Length: 304
Image (cartoon, rainbow, N blue to C red):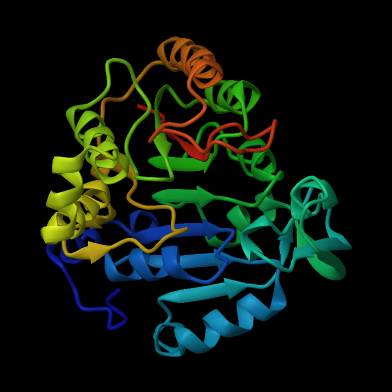
């Protein structure tokens, strides 16, 4: 992943936008991989992270960008009230850390411990820094608080939130967002019907990687495995950037697939729930997701 923030064509275009249109909120910064991409694209970033160790690590990683005024890190949690609250750290995967111990422990399966962290309403962050071009939200159970605090008359151009269910999609609709995409975090492809061509290609490449067909096994041994893995992961590259595992991926008009109405995506979600029951393994979902998070996906939305 490029660590030097060299400007791309997208970066130059972003820098020519109006003041608020240069701004992205990374709510749930974690290790800073998403922040790195947004900076590389030329945006200013307000990054929010409750875990003090992660916040300190990312501050060191992007010390130059902080000094230049391109990055502000807020080491706070986002909660329904201001104050100091218990935050649970997942010891095996920091992305699961949450104000909900059930989520932080992955339903009791992973070791976790509690710390106290200062917290803010998301509304106060908006009042301090303004309405951004894009908001990425991934804060394990509290995503809805960010959507609730948005001003329906000053919405960002784009938003993404972890897809925890239809109630969150309805909240986005009620806040004023009109068009939606449902994007897999496994391969950054849209979950839509009919499937995009890339989804069928990835599914076929994945089958070729797993099949025990003798001819295909010879092909893999002769170097085909590397080529097939590139096909499976090809959507992890965009304009010269490679998205690391665990990152949120592209956003806005860089996303594949078509924008759907609320009713279209609601019907699609119900159909994929049915398909998941019939086919536990797929390139579109994980086999062992939590009951409350059956897909590892994000909802992306725009107001126009």
